[in-house]
Image 1 (tube, rainbow, N blue to C red):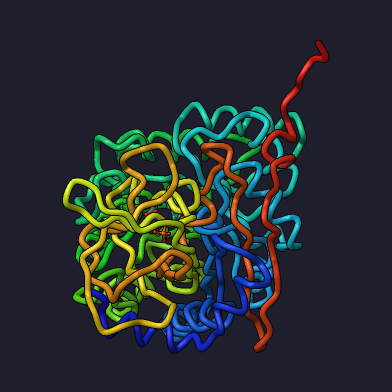
Image 2: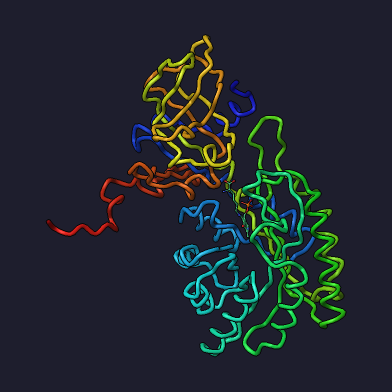
Length: 426
Ligand code: LLP
């Protein structure tokens, strides 16, 4: 059923999508820079009201469209990067190195060397082996590298099991005992400066309880670091994971409660467990860009088969993989003129996979070939997870900023798909 909340949502955007697709074609990603700014400022003001020395490092994996990265850089956001490619993107938008943190469970030697060369704020280490490799590189380059250690405190979160990251059985981080040994070892290394602690417990989390739980574990751990190793950390990186509302009954993450119950208690440890002027780092992705993106798709066919009515659209799981990969729900709104007659449809894409379905049992006004549909809340993990599967060029991206809508990523063409292939002449 089409929800009033989301119909209002699309009207709030106040965009003539029909004209837009006449110009740029479909499927088309639309991003709203103003919404991104609002989301960033909401988070930023809540955190800085409590603690001035904080840095919001936007998680590039959520959406790394360069024009969007530039908007966030201009707002003062930092970057959370997890690959050489994302580090490169940060450089392309002139992100100051002192605002970049590098995370990731399996950073390659080359990626580590690149991060060390850039002299970024923090590399968050996830294993003893990584720590040794960084020390080796740092002494070779004759530099001192700032490090954090990612700890896996085994905290349960209520989200899709593919996107929990802070359970004991997840591959991420180090368990507290190994992490303690790593801090001890790092303190003795000449070329590293161990200054931070890092956690990230999962994604699309809608309540603050797991964060409160992990905060307590983090404080206890840092108390031990201070009392036994005389180590008062300078950077407390709390990760991201703040969820947004995909369904009418869901409330997006209560950021002010989070600040009150997680950020504020931490600030009371300045000068005792933590350094006097310690920095709080957050790494949100979805919360900043999730509701700022819409995917516009055109209906190719409406057919009946096996007792079902199928609406077959021109966007597929290569454009938006979340429904196929996680069974994720995205609201859909028909943009074409609607008749007052309703039908129940399954909305699916063109990809040759049965999981290429966006919505099962969509109650909507009659849909016809040529109609436009808007798939909502696709700003995070939409474009960034898109692929060329089935040899489909990736969609174009437009962005509205200061009342103007501009193309910020052109539609790929067939040549783009085969750009890297090497075909010997026969
Ligand atoms: N920091 C680290 C270390 C992360 O691994 C992630 C996300 C983030 C920050 C940002 O998380 P966010 O605030 O966006 O929840 N593809 C999935 C989400 C995977 C998230 C992976 N890590 C999805 O479409 O739901």
